[in-house]
Length: 82
Image (cartoon, rainbow, N blue to C red; front, side):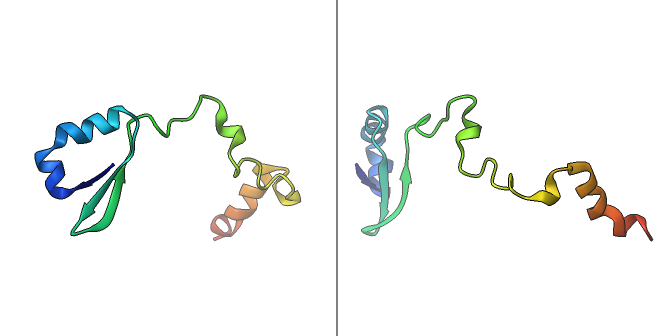
């Protein structure tokens, strides 16, 4: 559904009905798209799905990060040497 700023003021019931039908609502201002409203809960993830994220394990091949404590000590070394 597309809704102008005036539609949001005067026909909020229709906008909310579209959101209840799980439709995204495109907000327009002076004929140009300005934003999109999505129904609440449309982007929720399942619990435990963090391992499926594309960034999970992206540094698994780095040899310098095998020992995390040693890596952090090496980062802080210059600060403690003063």
